[in-house]
Length: 199
Image (cartoon, rainbow, N blue to C red; front, side):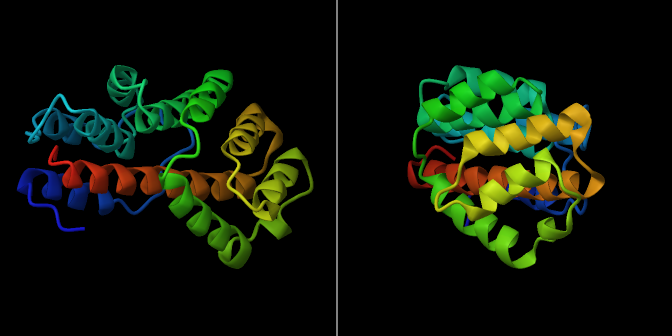
């Protein structure tokens, strides 16, 4: 998607230049200076729901959970805001709230891209079948076998992993799928904000 806002486009380029995957539960921003750049970002309609969602997504791509959370709380009445809020809560280990907000987001339009990309990766590229037997592998198998993306089962898989019952291999698998989840919602948010004239 072509973004006419050069400041926004520059931020996206910087965030996409990241080579390592974000942790399941980031403890600090990836690059603190990007938080300053995001705060200074001038959007066409800064108080618009999609503009706020866009800043939320930018901060989350930079592992800035607290800043992203502040934006998500402003738009939690909206399906996109609720979806961002759910992702943030599972990254904070607040799994019941994550499920609440993911459920509140309904069948979000970004779910289609997430389903396609996550299923393709799990079924064709991932090595989850060789992971050690256990509850996390069972949850990943349930995700891969489903006909629709199951955000609540994904939260359960992360909760199990973060409780210490998973392996390094299952961590990397969930980490990759979380990256797909965040990118799918960000792509949707960006396109919607541009189309609505809020970016």
